[in-house]
Length: 288
Length: 332
Image 1 (cartoon, each protein chain N blue to C red):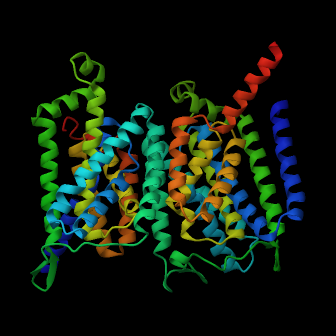
Image 2: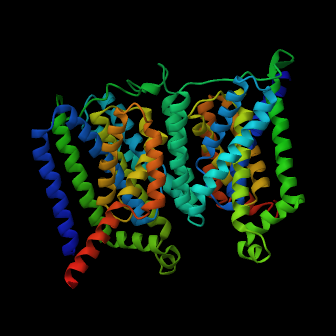
Image 3: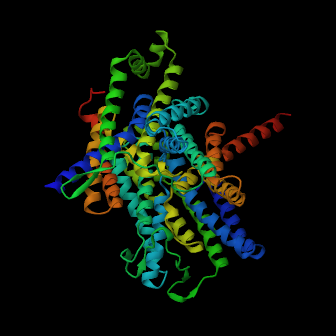
């Protein structure tokens, strides 16, 4: 019984981690159709921000939750201005350019901080369920994923800024005719997506440890999740995270983490064979 | 059947390969020669991507998956057989079969370009992680341990067919590698002259139109993808012969480099990717000797610059320039 509860909690936290690392990508891809292959490196930069800030004696919560999105959001704005803006509408070129960016970030950070793992201790400690211990921070991540999804939903659905952003993505020319500057909306959306990725990096830093190539561990999973999710970015990401996160965790429990990831990939490829437009291409089409 | 121009190009390429095979081993030191073999094996890899991307419109981000599979199969099989003769067909068949299977899932699922890029990239990353995690005695295939992060350092070099006692020397392997590259180029050129090749190019130009004309787009793409897998596997075998197989063959930085080679050399040409590969390899080898700059940083910057500044690639840009100059010369 206790074991079942622990496994269930692990599944939930696996799903939550997937939601957290995919959300930034989902916003950038779902809204702007920009495939950002440097997403993993945005996570990595967020992680480094958290580590460096807490190393400077800044409050732990401030350095996990506040500074990473600010710093990475800023970096995202610069990247949009310098690189992405030149390539709108050229999907494959954008993909290639952001891949170059990803390599450059990995190289740059390796030069600055060295190729070693640094960590930050996880808050909360652990609590017991029968004979087992569960990390409190895992449960905090579950909470964080719920709050983050709610915030993204609320901003897009309830605020004027969200309305303008959604409108611009649907028809940029019409938005421009109504007095909105599409360029600014694109720039802000990209920065917001980057900020979400940065926050994700800060959130997972205590669990995963931080090193220059940490992004590569997450990028594949994040992409597969967003793409399996399909067109409705928030619903799709949540549903796909639920499905793939469960598969990942169950197989990790039964075999090894590597086979967990292999199972996730195989599952995703088979799903895409059956539903080429992703889950929300067939179901829940009108959701956000 | 083969046009004059194609014949000329194939002739020049084969001649260059033979010249390189005859001359270079005389003048280069052993170390440089082995390095050159590595470059050539990667040239085969670049050619495979140049073929499927430039002429089939299939942007595969994980061409290294087949490269690595070829290398690993070759190493494992030749250690188990104690002879490399039968390891080679096996190491060519496996990547081809995997490419065909992956191609089936992607093309028959009608997954769009972008999703395909992500799936192929993920495939090579998963293989990378898997190969990395195979350290320890429980991970063996037959008598060959997989070695995890360290790979298989004892990858045997090619031997004379059916005579495992006589192993080839590095300069002989270089000759074989160069000839393989030349033959692959010729084969790719010839494939493009066949009906199959022409239809593939037509599909790349306009998929819908090709389909409406009655061609089976999915089958053609899958077949071309399998040909690419075959060539990449051959590159992997050659690579395994001059270095040894290790998980880096699947790694993100290799996967990225292949794309850069093709991109810098020129999409839509076959010689371009090979030229791009050798140029950039030389550059990164040089950059590796600099302790100041991380090679990834340099590569990344180059990659972005190539996309933004020379989107067509070096070879087409150069040919265009030459053509312009020639025209100006004619007029004056």
